[in-house]
View (cartoon, rainbow, N blue to C red):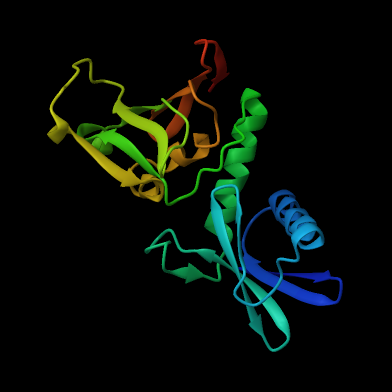
Length: 206
């Protein structure tokens, strides 16, 4: 059952619904408070990116509800009042950055794209490689099949997709998207097993 979280920001009552642990809820609330202090974001129709997550404020009876992009539908168009998934993704990003000691200053959003080898989309062992910086909507991330030793020059073997589609093919892959250029992550049977930095130093092992 979703919990209703309520904040009072300088006389503005702000609320949202989620089913997350207290730590990430507190982190999210502190971020909202900080952004309101600096940028006065709590207004009807205003939006904000926190991590890769997209949030919109909706005024309802003199209160402001926070809605999130709905990654189960079309997040560029659809919103949801349930922030659980969005905050879980934020939590995973922060946890992976903490454990690896790696982070990037780049803004990567769910709308940015990645390139995948098509066979990786149905593989039980994949790798994610941050090959380049974000440019023109390209996140710079590549997903390959960890069991595939053959290289292909055939464009038909590859596909470009928006990052939120990783939630359908390899949900744990979303956890590493805040890491910098040069990072390689191995994911087997739905779990991150290894992460190496740009110098091939292992910074995470299951």
